[in-house]
Image (cartoon, rainbow, N blue to C red):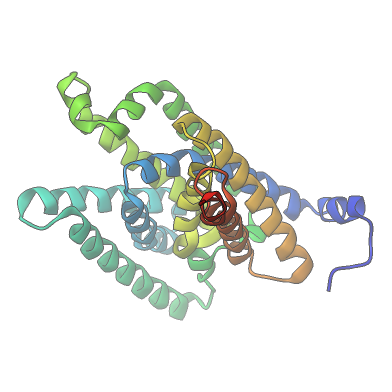
Length: 287
């Protein structure tokens, strides 16, 4: 039950705990980078690729944990490896890219589940928070690693924004103009992998696709240009992350699921009431 208190106390009460301050910091960073990178995924119709990479990081983080290494690095390596395998299968056979994604991410995900099951039997610890997220359990090291990833992702996007914009909307034209299309595509895959790795503690590998796609999709229904989609998407992602955290704190809900439910509710409102593209708005404009 929500405690009896004024709105200011309702907002400030969780801030007396260090774990909430760490969680809020990570939530803000992840909400921003997911919206930025997810905007490119949505424009290029690569939502399935985001899903593939998010599931493919699981064996990497499980192996890294087993070997006592950095789980972020292990997950990143597995995510990049999955994109390489997808591209290789697509180039070396008549298999379509979406089918290759399905093959690779299901195999990686099954391997990750198997490894986690084996590790939990041997160590008697719970690794399920990698699947569903546990942002309330972030450490100072997690905040540091997330900040490094966020700075790297945003720095790269700022440096090659125009090139990625051209490539996203007209890949054939970008190739004809001499842009390194292959390098841009590989760079985008690396950015996706980094974003997924940063989001693991927030929503987990199962729900990360929602935080990657839904804020940008919501903004896409409200504004026309990519940079506007990114900016509004960042606001939506941050708001959903913070709101989900507060709901999780006061109502004892799973933090990742609460964040996804908030961002999904925001998308539903935009889908119905967007002035230009909303279903109800279009219905009302009919003669």
